[in-house]
Image 1 (cartoon, rainbow, N blue to C red):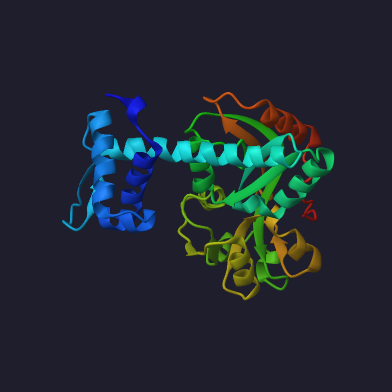
Image 2 (image 1 turned 135 degrees about the horizontal axis):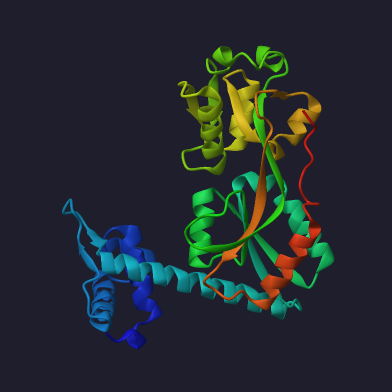
Length: 309
């Protein structure tokens, strides 16, 4: 195995095959001929001593072998690191000391811009780039090293991370102001007769909702209506399609203006925490540690303050 003979062109060709599903599609995406892609892949296979692509199961096009998939993960990390380095050098060229990439789960988008503004006001010499995604995307970014720091509700088990709580994160049920459950939420039969509008499977809020419903409902069945964003869920609740279990940090404005109200159900609001996380296996840059400490010292000052129950 001659890993020192591997080139970026070869790795990019491998990634293009994975994305395009064939040597021809890979060539089109990289503005290269199909034979040129074949040459890059063959050279990469010679360097690592393993077969990296194979004919797809359906016989149409090509797909990566297990070795190819593993090598592609490394290639993606290299591209992320190069992108980070380019951005950092650009920041330095503009007279700043560097650039930090902050990953935030989508529920955090309601306070993340405020956090970035507070960081920029305190340290104008540091550029803070904000990247928002769902939980799966943020965990993948942590694993690949796409983010210096990330903010999320529940630290992942994999990859191993360093995590520190930075503020409380309340969750509760919301409904239109005239909904009958606003005044009689102790009626579990009526509660479980409602449709619960929720985020996708695997999202932090969906997991928390399912655990709470299983606990208070003692195994009762319930209907869910899945939607892909908190904004869509809020509009659906206001339209009367059902009720929703949400982070109260996503509905601060609606609660204050009376467009939504809290259902005073048993054990709610449910308090969790926001966490600052970084990958455990990688030594953080000094600049990242500096921003980490700054966020911790803010003690959640950037978080919304939803109206009390």
